[in-house]
Image (cartoon, rainbow, N blue to C red; front, side, top):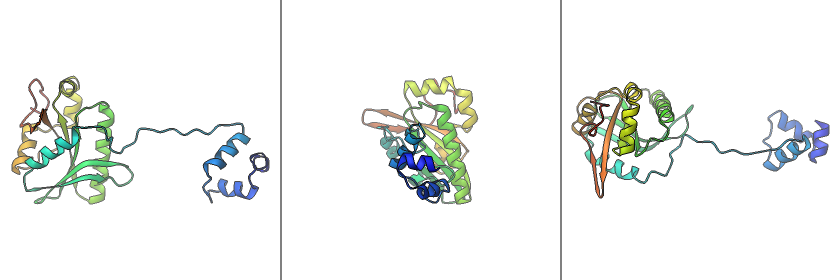
Length: 208
């Protein structure tokens, strides 16, 4: 410790406090210590759990969805997720007549399917624990050739994660029917028109 302090030009007592976690070293101190040890300091940025503000269609999908929502549902947008999971969810829908949370994510693309499924399950569990009620999951997808292809290619995976019928989910959201459980629903965007579909788009068996 003494040799490192001397080479780094840092007081030995400061090194001791850092080692005992009594103080947080500055970046300059870390670099000095690393240099004294013949090491390097690097900073990496990893993919996080927060929202990726790159989906230009998401706001239109949310707006369409809220217009269609039955009064029995109450919506909260951009809801922070408590520990142990970090980040936010696009929307949380609660029933006014039942203790139920529906955790909603709006996606116009699904570039990382496994990651999306894992994060959504973790967020739903964290919110359910924090609020002390049952939580269900809702994935709202934009109907595109790419998303329909993913739905066909990974139908078994998606059906296991979201087993409810799409029609039952839209009936609940639009008409206040009982919530059927984890679901996928679809939104179609054509020019200025944005529509919540009653069922899966043509050519997709998932959710039928």
